[in-house]
Length: 394
Image (cartoon, rainbow, N blue to C red; front, top):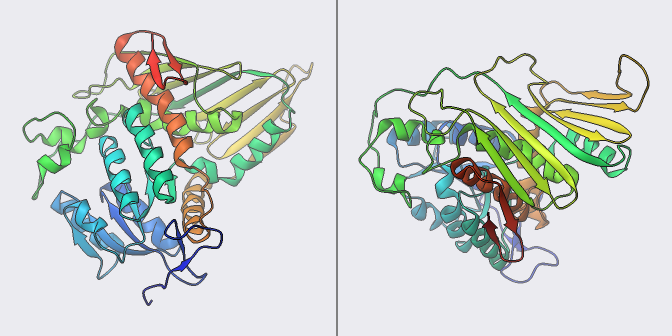
């Protein structure tokens, strides 16, 4: 298709945002074409975006990303050169977590809209810097917490907002799975290691860290943060919370050889809205049910609502010995569909300049809880969030 012509969005100040016609395609570039980046590339193409550029510091990932994108996509090894391309409308940031903030800030200042993988950021201060940059540039930024675009979750939120549950003072949640170990293989092509490290501490090239960055403190928060980013975000959204009051986290031993962050841990989060939320991660457990091993139970005074990836069940107060749900919604495969719905919402907001379902402020609210989780886990202390001062206190 021809390069789309931009017109100022109705009601948007000059230079603040641009909108495309209904039949135009958003020219998109992906920064970080590893496994998640390539999956998102395919999903963006599926919903109509034109994948016009691919960037990665590791040559095999770059080549695989170009193959996933489309014939003729421009290749880059330095994301800043991709951002210099005026023909690119939006970018996907699917890099290790410690790069999210710098890349999103640079992207919005370069006039790009951004779809950034969760979690939003690796530290709380950089999260506030991201919010400031996004609002200053008036760009559209969607955080990749796709439950916020899932129809099943919209229905669950209606139930909670209706007051049907009564007073909710406790939300319990978990994510169970079983992982045998980390990736163990050698680097097979050119890698710009210095650029990959970015703001992380200097160290020699390490294939274990490169392929398993998820499990090292310098770059991410492990499975604990990767999965809590989905669950805690959903809890805060459904309950109408912006940020926690206090966080306590306790973890077991590290049972994945070579990892730094435990795969078994529990978080207790206190909220100013007068409820407690718990999240337990167990990645040395058995997956016992594809729709129930990732679940949230909203324990109300009049009813309980269970919400997982692909179902919700509403249990009213009853004297019956065996509880049966009054309302149930099961949608197999809805988790995969939610990703496409989330991307559609992002692309629609690029055109309309309306706020996306997972705006940067929501991502920051979740990131505050997640960063406090890591700090609590490492320090062994209950930590409090001082919202007025924007700092964590013990």
